[in-house]
Image (cartoon, rainbow, N blue to C red; front, side, top):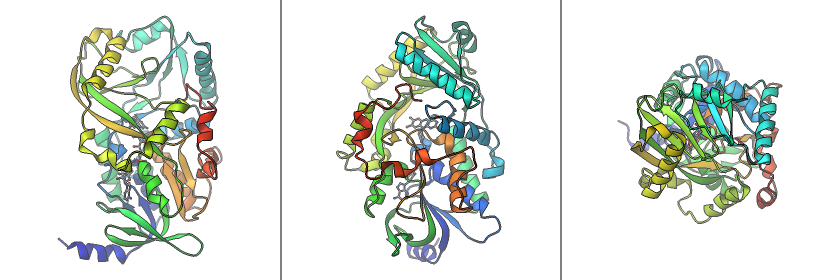
Length: 431
Ligand SMILES: Cc1cc2nc3c(=O)[nH]c(=O)nc-3n(C[C@H](O)[C@H](O)[C@H](O)COP(=O)(O)OP(=O)(O)OC[C@H]3O[C@@H](n4cnc5c(N)ncnc54)[C@H](O)[C@@H]3O)c2cc1C
């Protein structure tokens, strides 16, 4: 066992081709794709993670991979990412088991605006070649084996290509892939400052294990990004929206294991089956401009910043929250009665002002690249990794059909963020 001093010296003596800050699913994916694209070159890639690999939001999600999205470009990327997840070996060097459960979306039909939004979404998705179609009440009964309550005023859409993964298997794959791809994983290593040259490029990171030299930096620090880069004058607008997730024990006679994911926009809940007898649920991100503004206003009142995610108190839900979720379950799955609570936790969506990712080169620091998920990004991890690797290693924008301009950090430059929330430009049905 080397001493901390020896470890620091070892880190300091290395110069990396790329250092990825943050060992979540996005940071890991970037490191694997970058290292693979470097081919035989001896250059090294590191992930610097202040806790352990996958400790952040990447171990507190529902592991659902779906494509329907209010942004056709995001949907296009998700469609490609779905194919990557199904055959991860060529890009990560490992495979992950998946179930193609499909997903049923539930929305209200009585509001004309709402159903028009859903119809527009259906059309936009079909244009992208994504199978997302309205289905009949009878179809819902058959797909869910009569487990789901059907309401005449509701409309239902089906996306058959949706995958369910398993969170521990994803974490396991990240660890194995890191070894296979020869990534230096520096865990318990917190970045707290940067050294820059006269052109503004980052030349070194100051970390809790000493100084690390690098040619390129990927920011995959998720909800921590704002605070991390504030010191060098970069504004990364990310806030945390609290959400809680809960698991319940249910019988296969009440809810079949094969049930598609239920994205219930009437009750504001996602439901999925985990293997065994678990029904897992949580609320979706809020799409309402005012709610997003509120999340950003709270950032100033949270002295712990994103570290609130690591608070031990996050690993429970209170009675009121539990009752709220039980109510949603009982109203959607009438056969089940009152299910047995099997554990829950608080988590946080790392949202941006317009709920879109921040992806691509920084506008002021030319060797810095952002890869932030806006609360919805496990599903995009393999394609985001490829995109960032193309930018850094191949020095080119992604292939023709993908245009990431919509997700550039440039969109926030010199902008008063409240502009996003004053006009209700966000689509209420945005997925
Ligand atoms: C309840 C819930 C359910 C979800 N379900 C889904 C889903 O089904 N499908 C889907 O696609 N997405 C889902 N998401 C979203 C998904 O979890 C996130 O988008 C994704 O995990 C973000 O990954 P990340 O790598 O960007 O961030 P993180 O996993 O949070 O990683 C960031 C890492 O950076 C590290 N770090 C921060 N600061 C520093 C520093 N200064 N130095 C070193 N390291 C640092 C942190 O410790 C952390 O490990 C869900 C989110 C929630 C909250």
